Length: 246
Length: 232
Image (cartoon, rainbow over all chains, first blue to last red; front, top):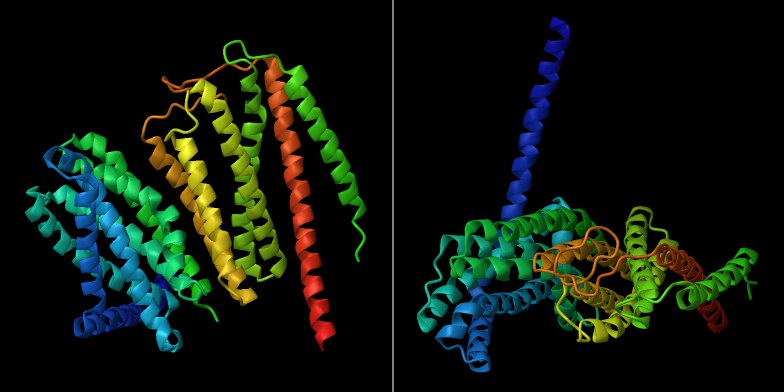
């Protein structure tokens, strides 16, 4: 009895520290990939400025297309915001993956002695941070020009959850799209039909928070967002290996 | 040229007989529905082709999983064949639904969860074909196709649930109905028999078509190889 438990204890300690070590290595690789994207972006500001200008243009086009006077504004704000985010998002996803492909950077990344999933999560988190930055700028601008207060904690939560789901699928698909002949055209065609559940749930729950609908009625939409995020992060994690295999 | 396998010849004949019988049952055996009249007869093939569509896309996702695990080219061909069949049958499903909806709902189209889901499904698999078209390397084409078929099949139920949180007016003939569904009816035994028989016939059509399409793909590959041999 004593022997057995003692043996167990001994074998556990190195295994535990081994696990800790590899986890630390994994996180370091992950951070390196995120940092690479952020540093490149901080120096060139290509991606963010393009996404941002594009997002503002979309909002302005909506203004003229829908004549957003006070009454319509209340009901369509959620929709306008999500269409803007998803269009600007595709722009960012295509660009960030095309940069990897252009000068063979992707091959370099794949040669690095890190787990492939670290590349996927690194790129996803990089893309997520760009998307959240754009959203963080679009929201106050929208509030300002339309005189609507968008800083509702529930709405911010929805925007976060929706962006996570969008980027989780988008990163995987943009990795596929850049390896095809029709790369720029293909991404929205591949991505939009798959993220429709995210868009429906996000629009519905955003509208719910903006119109102060009861929490109980918004909850199913939030659940759907969380379920989508979990399922698609898991699947993308499992499939990413096959997408970058040479 | 390879001769057609004997079993496939028998399957062709059997499927044809089943289909003719199903058409006969729909028009002569099933009673006319009291409220909706003859247009209700669309229902038998409408549901059956939707069933074949779902079956195809499920087959495509499963072939995708097996292809990614085994790397055998045959599974890629099976996946592509299933998707092509699925697109055709979901289109039949949507078209017959519109024909029924015009007199019953008084509109060709409405944003009902089932209609929305079926159409988005159609778009997903159209994107699947476009994705494959954009890739020359056959290995990569097979891998990406498999990945997208899996992703697509997972997102379809989520699309359905998200659309279903809106209220539906589509009748649910099998199982409990929601209040507010327009064009609902209870099946008489004869209707139920016709319905089950249509499902059976369409399932055989699916298997038969899938076999033919896979065989066609195989022959296509062989022709390509022979062409290359001729050039050398």
